[in-house]
Length: 240
Image (cartoon, rainbow, N blue to C red; front, side, top):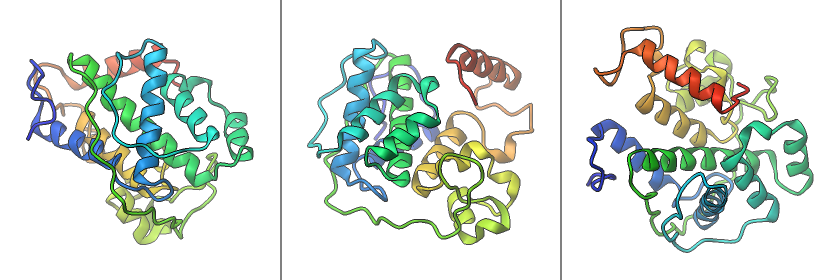
């Protein structure tokens, strides 16, 4: 069943499928937060975006769990003002009791949830409802190949240094297949995979990145896509 049956626009099947997988992931446990807590993280982000006038009032979320004040503050900040985040904000979150992996998972969940909510608003429909939470528990397993590559958290390196974890996370053991923007969330591999899947469905797969003739939509060329992306990034003060 399509995720956007109420849209007047035709949504590409592969994009709809990726969004279905994404929305379903919030009702499942992550590595560090339970399904109920992940729902609470999404709810906090949605409330913050509504308060900031960035989206309409969201649908009623299913049963949510309790999350620490530091987790709620992080979810709200990432949801409305990522360009204000700096290393001191990360350090404060750690001082307030979050682990590096808990921090990373919250960033991934909020970024992906906000992505879907912005898309829904753009096509003129309400944010999608979340499913009831799974009762499974988070695994709390840290990747074995983590390295300090200069980010705020450790990351799984691309290429042979990442071993099988690189292949499982990035889909390849080629260094060029794991740009840093994808490695940024790899302390929690499932969040990195979720980001990669959205990027591949909404923008371009890594294998097609240098093919400037590639486009999902025949009515818009790849150079036009890049121009739009650059303009939106500039308006949003994207520091990347």
